[in-house]
Length: 376
Picture 1: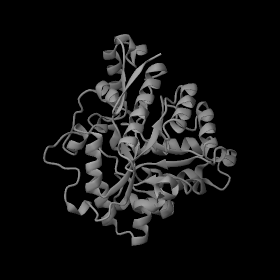
Picture 2 (picture 1 turned 90 degrees about the horizontal axis):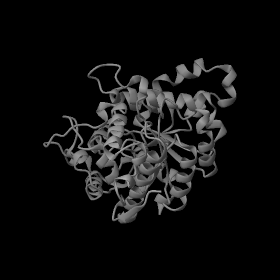
Picture 3 (picture 1 turned 90 degrees about the vertical axis):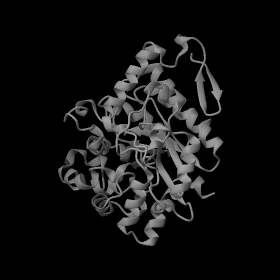
Picture 4 (picture 1 turned 60 degrees about the vertical axis):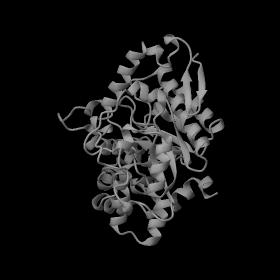
């Protein structure tokens, strides 16, 4: 069993090298190589590169006089994760916030951007699928403990969407219990696929059964399946595959009837739905009659129940398609910070020209309805 020492912000492994939380899959250096390989599968564009001239908020247009935005798509980096991932290489579209991320720095950037609360999720959305057993369990626990400490250290500024080692059912069920009971998590963060198994796969049914029992909120972050990490040389998978994998995940949940079997789970998908708004009618038209029980009121009726954040998807084409698919009540503000500059979403959202009532709903009203504790 791994022993940890609590620090101000998270856990630090105790003992010799053999006690390293990733010891079960090899030495720390081996574990680091495993994680780096996993991060590569998430897409070379997952870590976007440094440009000293950029700031999180490019100008005063991004801020508001009353910081009321609720950011449901906001990443954290635990010390264990950062140590294993190693130095973050950045590109011209990135921000210093990615390379220099700290909890206090995140709060400062939130203040500049008019964000009152951010819901924290793991650095890349979840546990890489080539980490299994004790390494996956340990990384999930470390990330969740670190996020919970951030919630305590900055009262009223953060919430926690806890991550799970999804390929280990028993460990995931234990982490659900720990996260909700001990850490007071606001929900769960998952990835769109795990080792080419998408969330509707029957192996995940016991986990969703427990989440349904708890009326859980589930935030689903995209990743890249193993089939598609290097389809186009020189093109990061995150440019397109993230959006397509969101569609794969939702299709998996539809064809396996997960939305119907577990109606108490509230799902949040990212980036204005990726390719979902464009492909929704196509999926609906081709949905096999034999699977109708999984979507008794039709595919589009199931999709209209889902929530979508607008992080890195606040552009005219994405928002126009999304608002044709779901009502304003299902849209949430998000930034994808620190992988994406807050101004990218804020400026696009402002320039789209939503009516004032819709702006308020997306900025915070819909999130407060979804997370009632934020009303206090």
